[in-house]
Length: 377
Image 1 (cartoon, rainbow, N blue to C red):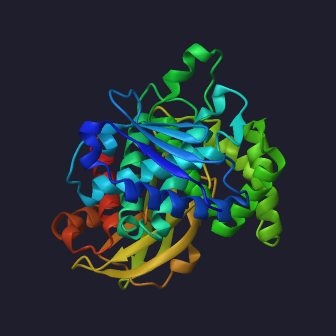
Image 2: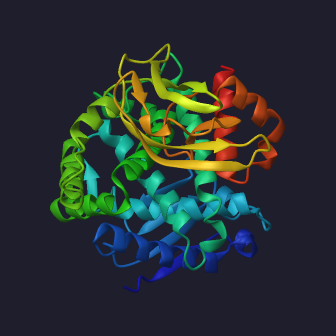
């Protein structure tokens, strides 16, 4: 599907405007979303308007995105991280053409879903690459780790709130534009992608958009569609998304996540993950799926344990790790798919203090730094 595009920018900033990059990112991203959502781009054109002194980063008007020109074209030279953000802003607003404009939340209490979904899916689209996006795909999830730290920081505060927050009036809606709505919310959509797998996730989205296009929805509408998509894709692997929503979206705060193990002759005899509610959190244990990385004493990756299911209970015992060699360092939440106050062991802190630069996975380096920052709070 060909979508006509135009860029509008002040004459004084024309030389800084990367219009070909804007057009290319948009074309690639629209194709990705159309395939993922099962719905064509819903409007007849897309305009990109660079706006001076703009209050927000960008806004997804129907068929017309308005941007802060400070983000998009204030500099002639931009670094790869800056250009990654440039790409993700476009992809975020394009996602809203479906999730926000084609289907719109019924009330402000679901603002988080509108914004969190667009944030997580924009980083997913960036990570997939494609024409004009390949240059930024290695930076995508690394860049999103900053959003996660924002959300985690707000969630550890006494002023934290549920993701699906109470919003009795429109006057209160702007107060929900915070780290929990954007940072934590998008982290949970990213976790939901990992929990379900990408194809079942997309199957649920296609049902959602087919059922509700040009209408208004609530959180149960979204979760019901995702449940059907998952059940049809993975009929032998039960997953209760209604319970997932209650545990994650309708309670506040975050849990500490720590690894505990016993060993003999340098091998694990017991390994478990403990959840402990943080100070300002509800007393709730939550299910999620994470990766665990084992590192040697030089900071090299020994083994990646993928798709470890942490259950909604205090202790999750990992029987399959019995007999494995105890590594120099253990990193819970390798690749940053999970959400929590993950704790490093004393041995792991000592290792990464000296060898973090040797860790090849850039996202894992960011995960270690984020965990250390949280542990110092």
